[in-house]
Image (cartoon, rainbow, N blue to C red; front, side, top):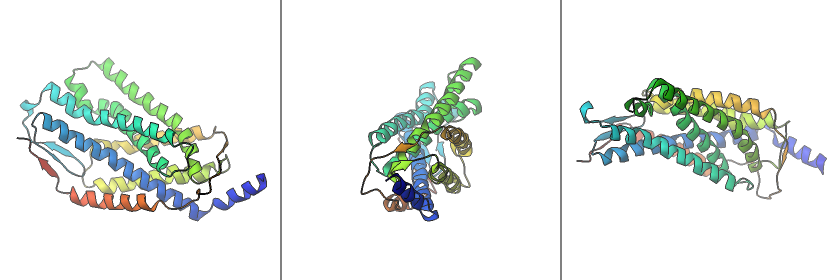
Length: 284
């Protein structure tokens, strides 16, 4: 039985299956990223409406049509922090969604995984880089007139938050192997990690970059660097992983997630075209 399992596993580690896993994960990577991005754009619109600030949002940026003197402390705090709070909540819900499906070979877990990673990158990366570069949530910290010590502590929270997610994310990706395989072993680890994580990161980052050119916002300029560092830590953690055995399931097989792939492509192209000129919201 053990011999048959090994033979079956070896037969699954093919170039064809490698690219199926990579394409599935890349579609999840891109869709999760755009979902987080547009949730934040929506939060700018909704919070601006609370103060009757006209705002334009497009495929990459936002612009408030007000004079500098019209900004208030309350408005800055709410408008520039709401997206981060929403992203943090999405990350928590994604963790709950992933672990509720952990034992089931359901491909949607891959999407939840990338939602967790992108949420963590946006939230904790914002605390770290936004604090240092005074962009994003950094506007809130500036208007709060925080001392350098307080800013340093917030930056450390961002750093250790990213470090924690990077360390513990490996257990999620290892268990997600049950979508395709009946076991996860040290021998198959390079194959699966490359297909499920590193190739999607490379291709997905290029696709995200192409989506936002010629504009690029704070998160899009620096987020891929933060994510890349997280994945390096992730790889180092993977070398100490244990072998895992999963329950047998007759529906388990390596196949394209056609619905997600098609939806991601349509949303990627459609939203880029639809948001090219931006949408103006006037609350007066």
